[in-house]
Image (cartoon, rainbow over all chains, first blue to last red):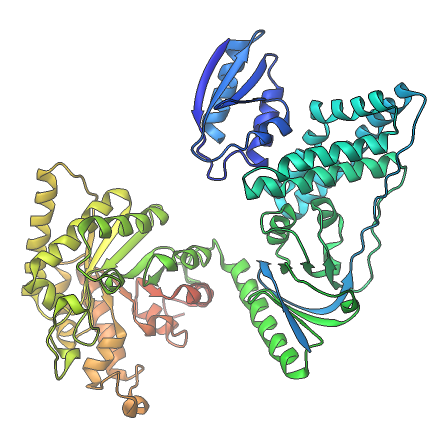
Amino acid sequence: MIVFEFTVKDENGLHARPAGLLVKEAMKCKSSVTLKKGSKKGDAKKIFNVMGLSVKHGDIIEVEVEVDNEESDAKLLEDFITANI
Amino acid sequence: MYSLNGKTVFAGIAIGKIELFKKEQQSVRRYSIDNVDFEIKRVSVAKEETISQLKALYEKALIEVGESGAMIFEIHQMMLEDQDYLDSIDNIIKSQSVNAEYAVAVTADNFANMFAAMDDEYMQARAADVKDISERLITVLKGKNDDMSQSEEPVILAADDLSPSETVQMDKSKILAFITKYGSANSHTAILARTMGIPALIGIDYDEDINGKIAVVDGINGKLIINPDDDILQKYKTKQHEEAVKKKLLNEMKGKETITKDGRKIKLYSNIGGVSDMPSVLSNDAEGIGLFRSEFLYLEKDNYPTEEEQFAVYKSVVETMAGKQVIIRTLDIGADKQIGYFNLDKEENPAMGYRAIRICLDKTEIFKTQLKALYRASAFGNVGIMFPMIISIEEVKKIKKIVEEVKSELSTIGISYGKVELGIMIETPAAVMISEELAKEVDFFSIGTNDLTQYTLAIDRQNQKLDNIYDSHHPAILKMIKMVIDNAHKHNTWVGICGELGADITLTEKFVKMGIDELSVSPNFILPLRSCIRDCNYGNV
């Protein structure tokens, strides 16, 4: 399992648009991708899960990437997040 | 005639007939079914059909509102494909042996409630998205298509609320404005209305009997006026026309170069009095800031603003302009603008008194504080500094000496600064007469035509009795401007005008021919002026 963290820079947090983009990106991954905000967890491939975390600007989010292509998937997501969220 | 108040989502004026938009109430019946697998299969077929509808809507929205506005329909597709959402529908069908429509309706309520319970206004508004996709799915399950009937003539559309897909599906050429009873400024409908540029008001508590009545949507003041009388109607028609002209100009002139027909580029800058002017500077496409009046920093306070306070304000403006030039004028106050803590004596003739640079060169600590804040801000973009009320070379030399002190003090404590253009205001006849010598000392001149007129014609601007002879087009003023430009250009010093004459389009061509390099005006004048300059010739054709 690969775990990395990021801080949400988008001023509106993970609102519909960035959440949608993130889900789209996560769907490309073979691995399972889980987002953690504090004690709350959500599947990054499910839009309702991601939006349900109510992620705001400045929140620190942990991303867990598990099995299959975890290395390349983690890199894909990390690059995407750095550039977009 | 009566009016209702609401909240503006998109400003603009619309006049026309109101049409009530009635949603067909989705009544969903619950009934038992025998074949669970068949019911689940119906959901998956309907889901595919719904997704292809959403794809079509996405394409339509892409053309009408662009990618970021259309994105919502892509998100709607993701919502429909969300595994939890689909599992919930299937589970309800299986566990209760009920019809698909009912299972979707219950799932929609559950998911919408989840959003409604969130602690964030934006997310709460997303409950509407869940309902929107679910209603669409139910409509498909029922085998109906949801073509919307729309009248032939363009109308002001009134609805309880509108979903994003309803908004996009409508034929926009038939919509003058949207008004809704509910909905939030965060709803996608509001966002779409803004992108499409359709006047829209929300929170209008109308009665059903407004259907078919003539009304004015005043999106500027957030008002709906029903059955307006002739005077009001005429007033709004004029206003609407002005808005249309402005909008046309905006569309035509935004992003265009300010360049004469024969290819001379003129810098078109904006005057500002504070940070609150920045939105209109940006929306009117100013190419820089030609006069940032720093007085407000001093007028707002009970004591001298600190270096930190000033730095924060300058930095924010410089960063907002992102590399475009920002020219800040140092403190320009006198006995006519009272600031208590300066303890200025009352004067007989404040216009010619202890003011502006005269105060700064006397109380150098105040001056240095401002200069330090300005130089620190220069590390974040393109800063210019200009000094008001100059009458002599000695003043300029003194200023430059103080500037050097400030720079070396900053360097000593390891603070970096950028390259800063230094300029002076030309607003006294003395400065005009010695402009050739002054030009050797500075990077630019900015002609303050208001004070220059007052000092040249010996007319007090505050005295209303003299208004009829206060003539800013006086040949003396125009000759002076020409003289300043010629002298400045001999030494590669550029010249701008930041007084009211700069925005006077009856003189623009004259200034262009004189060789003016920059005009700095209120944000509202930028685009009309750009349009005017693009019609001018610099040389004599």
